[in-house]
Amino acid sequence: MSENKIVARVNGKEISQDDVLKFLNDIGPQVAMQFRSPEGIQKVIVELVNQELLYLDAKDNKMDEEEAFIQMLEEAKVNMLKSYALNKLISNIDATDEELEEYYQSHKEYFKQEESLKASHILVDDESKAEDIIQEIKDGLSFEEAARKYSSCPSKDVGGDLGQFTRGQMVPEFEEAAFSMEEGAISQPVKTQFGYHIIKLQERIPAGIKAFNEVRKDIYRQVVALKQQERYLDKIEELKGKYRVDLRF
Image (cartoon, rainbow, N blue to C red):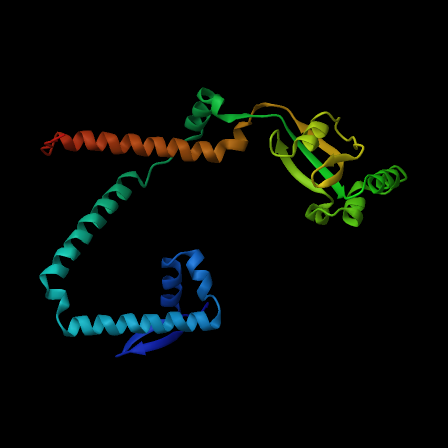
């Protein structure tokens, strides 16, 4: 929809592809998925036409002059102005590198990481088959190729790579074997409820504090949020000195 094509007209009012996209964005991605087909887009266009017809009818019948609508409109304006004022108050807040580094140094307990492993595996349903595969690897077949050839786990498509994991994320038998291995080692068959695993330990990541660059984006969001809260509370205290507040609780 690169060109803003007109998809309908109602009493001279044009409805465009941009209007269709806005409607889909407003209803949220999960609901919008139901309307991504050509038939779904047609339903959206029909709905936009229907809404425009209702709008025209409401104007003709002077519903915009009814007391209930005027009250509803005023309430909406009040709520929108509150949101606008809050967004304007906190929208230009930023954080310097010095502030991020200071937060990191004074909150290192938030950035602890457990010992973790990076490992690959090959999963088969028979112990003797697993032993035969281990022998093939010893004879020169790469672990990754063996995983693609023999493993029944979906990870075979990436050479058996399981990514990074900590204790408690794998079944106990697998975890006990993996955490007792040396980097680069290949295990003997490990039996679990899923079958027999051949594990290759790629890397051991020791427990410690995450590096500043790993968590910089998270720290930035947190520092900005704290500064926004501080500005908001300072503004409220200022306004309490300007306007009378009478609490009844």
